[in-house]
Image 1 (cartoon, rainbow, N blue to C red):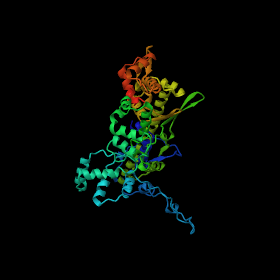
Image 2 (image 1 turned 135 degrees about the vertical axis):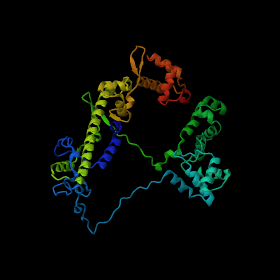
Image 3 (image 1 turned 90 degrees about the vertical axis):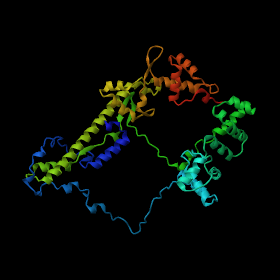
Image 4 (image 1 turned 90 degrees about the horizontal axis):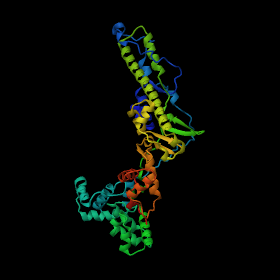
Length: 467
């Protein structure tokens, strides 16, 4: 069950760990098929340790088999270099981190030792988005307790002004309003820059709540003038630290566990080959077991050694069987999902996704609901319409005005389309959205519309307004 839950990359890591821990498990295809149960019925507890204290030459040399040094030294040596060959090294990129770049800029300012300590502490307090989330009073206390630097709020404020001169513009701000103001003050003067600055400085609340009528009345300007001022603001970066190219964020690459193709009008499912490695039990370990069975004199040392061998063989055989079961479970489950949602996979229209819950697939394949959940939660499938998280195909059912079951995904897609097509000067509130969906045959309550809208990460009508 644990193997089933793992996506492809995590499964590969688990496989590597198992192969490192168990020398009886080998990659690649086995040359000769061996009988799986040839050692399973042996009773190794019947041997008398006193039979022999000496290991014969034909018996197991456990050190030889377990040695990591199976390749002769001469095979690992090379002497194919000429005296004329130059020793070349590939240059390696040494990216500068976001904070180190700020420190480098700080070095261009003339500061005394105490000021530099405070400024560097402030740089260290900047988060990855470029903000300082602590108050000046808290920073003063932190400097005293953690750095042994005793200062006052005025000095820290003065050093903050130095930080605000660094690039990218807006870095070191304590909130969004200050961040936008810093960027506006560093911009080249334009016709509407002064108006944009005044709006952020003095009418920030009205701006964020999109009370455009109040702004037009306050500044006695036209709709077009306000639009151009807002355009100046929209060009600013609310996350100055996030835009730094040297921020070296680790990007997680999604590896699809399955792939669905359309071949001659039919769906074709394949499992990522990385989920189906070729493994076999070590032939050397099998031979060691056979050698022990055939030997006449069996010592206590040999008995301990062969118990170790048997344990590794059992573990390797179990792991290979577990991987085989994992492959079958993954394929059977995804195949059932593919055929259940065949109409969608052939067309790509999300409106055609049928209501589907875990129990529906569990009943089809004869597996437990928890198994289906493990397959769906962390696996991706590559489709002609993009790579999708499998659990996104599951949804509850709702009744339309014809009494038919429809997927909540279908309703959300229709809701999203309505909002995309609305007049942004007069966005539709939730009660009007409910009325429009009812006209299309989906009697949905206003509170349900609000829930779906939040799940789609769509703001309320007022926040969708544009001038």
